[in-house]
Length: 228
Image (cartoon, one colour):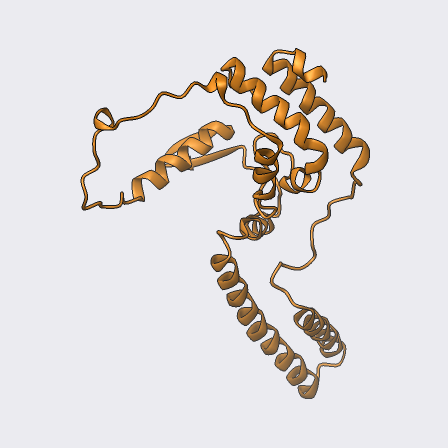
């Protein structure tokens, strides 16, 4: 194959170039739209809100006590059901943040009414701009509130551990190794730095396995980690 005769960085570049071209040509595209209602709104709540709006229009047109009572009752039901469904959604999101982080980030984007990262953020009266600075800011914050676990057993120094030397140039992966890793990919996690959805690698594993095998073995044999 062409990838076998190239330096690892050139091979990875061609691999991604073809992958992105295939995705752009073959994957269906759709228009994104901002949902009218928040994520936790059920069909029942939406219908109840519609009934409340109709009752409000009727009351505005015919301001009788009976019409007001009907509108007021529907408004109270909307508030009660909205609070109940919101709390249920928050609990579900918190419990599934490890197994389904997409739900959490979807909720955050919905609350912000935008799907993009902020251009700048403020923390401790310092303004951070750009993805790298903002990410480092989050890292410093979480590290400041993170408690290191306490281990009772002393960990031996690395100098006292007998380790056999590993010659990565002699390490050779097989197709079974590649398939094993591709099968372990979770489709519920967000894309990595290459912005390729994880489901693409999992569903197209029979096509991608051989190119990936060549790239990994090329990287091991040359002792070079790709730039991408």
